[in-house]
Image (cartoon, rainbow, N blue to C red; front, side, top):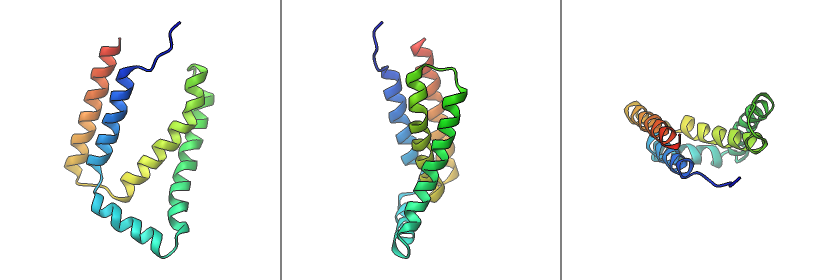
Length: 119
């Protein structure tokens, strides 16, 4: 049995980060970051820590409920934490709705194409 990292997964990960950058408004990110960090620095830690805790709990629940291999089960909490962080970044500074819809369509199309190519 040969263990390797599929190229489709790497391409999908790059597409997810590109969609994140398209969906968010960078100027609004900077404004929100200054507002979160200036008055009370723990506000920023609480926001991202809460998102990590929420995503991690979902990942732990998925870890016990799934029937995947043990490696995927161990990565489920980490994937949940990362998903929580990305979700907070999108909720703090959402971009225009048309860019978000376009990015999600590109992401779904890419996922479908890579999944078809992997089979």
